[in-house]
Every structure is written in structure tokens, then in C-alpha cells.
Amino acid sequence: MRYFLILLLLLCSSCIQMLGDPQPIHYYLLEGVPQETNIVSDKALTMSLQLTNFPVYLDRLQIVTKNDDKTINVSDHDRWAEPIQGNILQKVRENLRIVLPAANIAISPWENSTTDAIKIKIMVNRFSGKLGDHTEIDIRWSIDGGVEEIRQGHFADQQPIGDSYQELVAGLNSGINNFSLELAKNLSRE
Image (cartoon, rainbow, N blue to C red):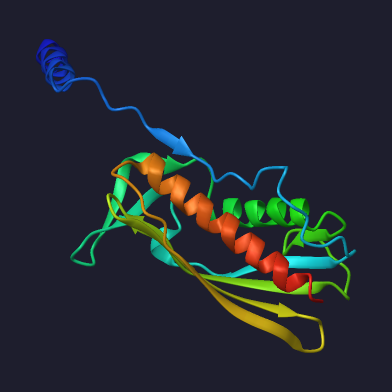
């Protein structure tokens, strides 16, 4: 019986090896705006960023794309290198630090900020795209001065992309950078 099990295991491993080499997994991170990006304002602002909404179907390491028939694909071989929610917040903060260099920016709820900090709430509704077509980013945001909401807005972005996940990530990256710059312009009015 033991020899039979060993033979069965050898046959199974042979069958698995005959299927070919496994495809490598590709990992991606968003990248910030270039360090040389123009400063929007040199005001000394204290603010706190908070992601208050993020689609559950996107809350995974695998990259999600959409199809023509409104269904989604979850990639087996293309993944975010870290949870995308945190990566988005980190990139927005890094971008704001470049274009608002005097700003003190915390990420809520993990980092403490002063009670008089401007609270920026970010609600991501869409952060995906269709390969061979375009990316789709839809973000609502609000700026709260503590006592009252100062300003709110809506950011929508589409970037044309090719058939690769690398191009999808580059398009999403460009959209987050554009969002950061729009947010900075609104903050510079405070």
C-alpha cells in the first residue's frame, strides 16, 4: 500500500510538471509625482487624511479590471504589493508634501494630528479600468475645518491604456497624481 501511495504521488507531480512552468506573479505600487513638481502653496497647513469609503470588491491584493458586460476580472498574476487603500493614502500624502512643502500631514486614524487640523475625507467610488480601453477613477472628497465643512468636490479621471496591467497601473497612478494636485489647489485656498 505504501508503494502504491508513493507511485501515485510521483504520477501526480509528473502531471503537474507537464502543465508547464507557472507564470510569475507581478507586483505593483503606485508612484508619486516627480520631486520637481511645482509648489502649489507654501502655507503651513496641518491636516489629516482619511479614506472613508473604498469598494469592497477592490479591497484585495489581486488587481481588478472590468469587462464590457459589467463583470469584473480578478487577476491571478498581477497584484498590488501592499493593500491598495494604504498605498493610495501614502501617495496622496507624498504628493501633497511635494506641492505643499510646509504642510504637516497625518493619516487618520493611525497617526495623531492636532485638534485644529484640517480633515480631508476621501471617498473612492471607482479605482479600476478595462484593459485595452481606459482607467476609471471616481473620488469624492471633502475638506472639514473642524467646525464646518469648508469645501467638497468630485474628481473623475480616465486615462487611455493598452492591454497590459503595467499600463493599467500607470494610468491609475497618473489619476491619483492628478487627484492629489487638484486637492492641493483646493487646500491652498484655505
